[in-house]
Amino acid sequence: FICTYKGHSNQVESVISIKGNKYLCSTGIDRTIKTWNRENQQCINTVQSPNNKFINSLLYFTYHQKNIHNEYVISCEDEIVVYSIEEDLSFQRIQHLDDHKTIIKCLYLLPNNLFASGGYAKTIYIYKYREDFTNFTLFSQLKGHKEAVFSMLLAKNGSFLSGSSDRTVKIWDLNSCSCLCTFNLGRGHVTFVIQLNDGRVCTASNDALIRVFNEFVPMKRTIQKGNCYGGGIQFRYMF
Image 1 (tube, rainbow, N blue to C red):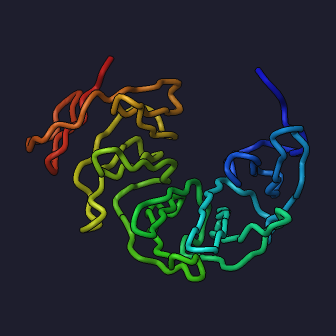
Image 2 (cartoon, rainbow, N blue to C red; image 1 turned 60 degrees about the horizontal axis):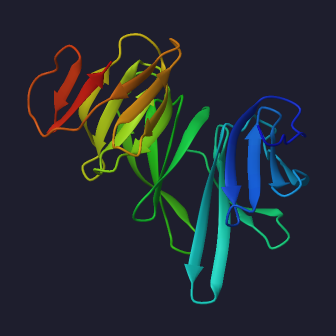
């Protein structure tokens, strides 16, 4: 335990670092985004949700070209809001995206000027942005989950994964926007998906379990107990 940042009046949902890890941004169900000085844990700036709604996740972008250096934060409620970070660490709202029409739970930065969002719409929305972040447009949609999308991951082998409250992890082909494989955990809602340094994938779920998947193996077979085969990818449980 090192230090505590105090200032939110309710549950904190997301924390990110900005400005070369010099500052933190946090948000939650108190409907604010707060910027913190990491040296003294003091709150520098507070931004109120434009629609006075809970904010579930934050995503940080940077743009470098010649003498231009811009930084951006994206927040999500039931819409996505894009802010530019000014020199004084204030936030300037520059665009909002309202395709979801319901609560958004997660954001994920992808290659090729793309980012993804998921939530209670059951669909993963992928947006494309210009390199200078002046325009964001809906690029594609990944449909297949039966309930809310809580987490996303771009694995080291290029596979895009999503975890959902429908108790599944899906593997997607971003080029064709199709689902390659669905692995049914059969128990808890999948709330988090992360990849370890050794390449293994961990999932967290609300059945109080952390599951570790051992490997991706090129294989084409039908789904079997304890394994997931399909689209040339295999997940194998490690217990």
